[in-house]
Length: 322
Image 1 (cartoon, rainbow, N blue to C red):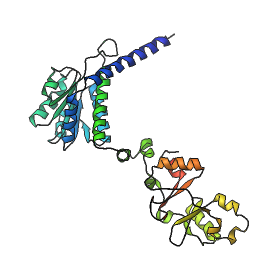
Image 2: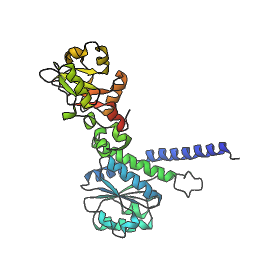
Image 3: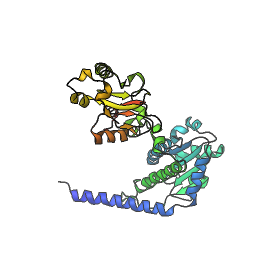
Image 4: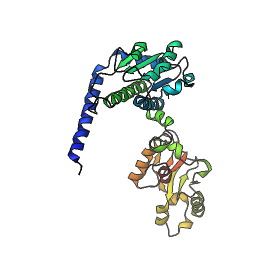
């Protein structure tokens, strides 16, 4: 039988060890960090990130984080770099090279290439006297800490610090560039996150698909419009085209007696709930849920309330919201 208490003790020890390493990393940061940010901001090209082994995995993640937060970045595998991928680096780029020891032999060609072509290089390593740090324009030194494995041979605390340092670089650049959730969405149009950051105007129905009738339309024609457009609802506009009301299934039920003798204006619910095109779709879902309704007409925040579109709850559910 396994000793579950021992497993928990190990997990807590690992996390505590890595947490202490992060505390030491925070305390060790200085002007070299600012210098690294200045170099990355001055790049007219991309940030080229390289590392071998576990550092390579961390490098890939840092490259992805930078690229998704407004800093063009690309990972180059050091072994592939020696066989043609060095061509991915050019003047105007900045190299960010990761190696815990600072002596990883596979990085030699990458380092030499940056020196030969005057490509600024930021090195991240734990040894100030290492080749990587000595050759770098800016060296970010990881503090000497205990690896969480206990034997000191498995990269654990060191890779956690490197990952956190990459995140710190990315967030500092992001904040400097005033990178907003709207910008983030442009890089993440798919998936749950992309859905949460979608705007109403990205999902709404518009043009000929919009179910709208003038206020004096006979209810017989209103029913045809509701049936044709398939949303179970129709907007009612005045002579200027501004939205005055909405007709839903509930309105139809409340006016069943003599319905066909009435006009749209006599059946509609006045002053319907609306939303603006620039609003986040997630906000629209919250409004629909709170009002217990299934759709919202879309109008501009200012000016005449002319219907620009219609957002149905099904549109939000289709992209993963709701």
